[in-house]
Image (cartoon, rainbow, N blue to C red; front, top):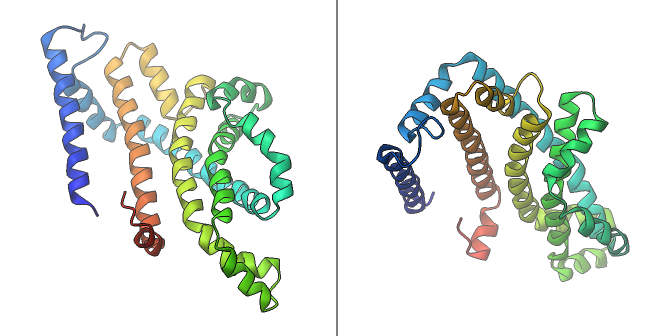
Length: 257
């Protein structure tokens, strides 16, 4: 672990919190609309013992995990297929480039019309938004495979599937892992965004909406802080797993995150 990097990040967060607290104390902003940071942090700590918030957080994390699993199950095979079939990739590329820039939040109203079940709605939105980095990274990972290694296996009589399994997939795995890490953060964003826009009976987004409707800005911001923390922790876990599984790749590229 790069402890210096962690300390710099912690110092940046502490500096931001201190500045936010000073702005609140100065009276420049009405604390009815923007409570002091110490109040928000206190409310965030109190949410740890709030069974309603814990239930909502559990619901959001469950949807996040299911959405990410579905994304990997769909986008990785699709990326492998397109990455090994250049003509198919060339045919599909215009559609990918057309759909990918569309803001993911913009498809939530369409998903509300298409899905009556709230869980299916959130999963559909997550999979749509999170699939792009996994799909693109998988395709480019396969393009980065050493052609000499593939030709060597073919010269020994190995077919396309063994070449993919023995050379292409292991070589592309770090790229795929990076795509999954990016998708993990997107999945958190879309899970909470869908809860905010589509409503429902549970989820951090629903909790934020209810806190706002009750004029509890402190709870609204506290829940928002927890939402950001979920994304931060998910990214840290993904980075740790990626480093452990693909240590050789980081050593070869000299990269350090």
